Image (cartoon, rainbow, N blue to C red; front, side):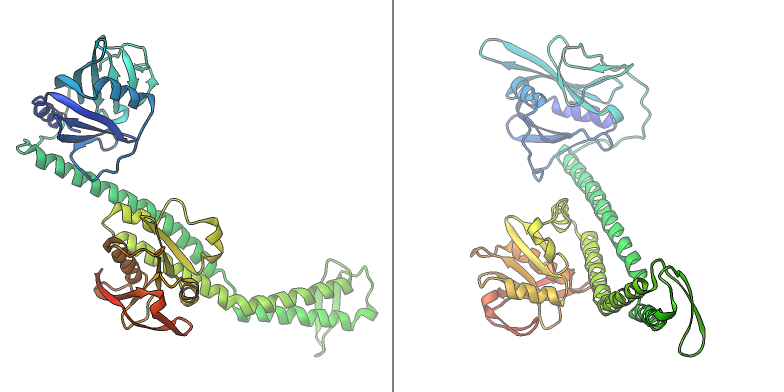
Length: 436
């Protein structure tokens, strides 16, 4: 927050006569409504403090001592003065609340001072009643019951600031800038986490042995075990370094850790395990590739999103219920406004969704082309436009990597007839166009 901008804002706010309501709506955000209908958000984030106007902020209820005192002393209070302290990025709002027995005079200091950005409530004598942040250092002590030490004025060096001609436009533009910055930060954090998962999957894929390598190793062990068994009558239980002649007349040297008979049996067992692993290696590889494809699609969906709430739905901090963990390789679940939306991550995932969906659930699929299947659990409710749009968008984002315009058909599951696996016929459907 620039000093010259703050001084202009304080001059603008001086025209108001009353704090109609005041409350914290975020960990570091205070909403103040002036004269009944003019609300501003005072964002006290130390890295990007700002003052802006928006009705899109999701309100969170706070009941800490700071919030109780904020309401008690300043809600419905008469404004006595609003000013920027000389040569300091500090806004001082002095107000009077007429209670049942006496008048309460308070000053709310909103300090936009970088590292020590804070909100401090003082009484008429300058004694600290509460603060967002309490600290005690060699310069200042922000503790309840102590007299607030006001910061001395400093020489403020900053680039020339704009002259605010339209404050409404300025406050709205500030919100747009903050929203964009927050959106980019959220994207960066989510994508960084996804990239870590992709890195691990690629590492697992690169170190995955081929079925050819595993079968060769199995054959080699099997041959050695057979050779030991064929020569058991010439071996002692204590022999560990064996020199045996194979069926071609070549001398084979074999080092073992146990008696020849036990070692041969262990080789047979391990050889069998390697053959089984070779049979499953393609399945394991397919699972890794499916996970990689999903994560890359998820990353692309987050990159192209312009909505922080949508990004949080796509990649929430907490994943789905534990009971669904065994199906994580088949489907991905998203939750929005009480609806559960499931996406098939592979052919098997699509089949799983079709088999387990209820007749009143809604099914989504790209028109006339291969795509992921999407099921919306309806709980016998009709879909609103927001849910329909989100489900259709998911269907497109996880079915194609190319931008363009796509048609998505959707209908109730009872109108979808399975032909073979995830191949279906369907009737009584609607179509929505999605552009990505």
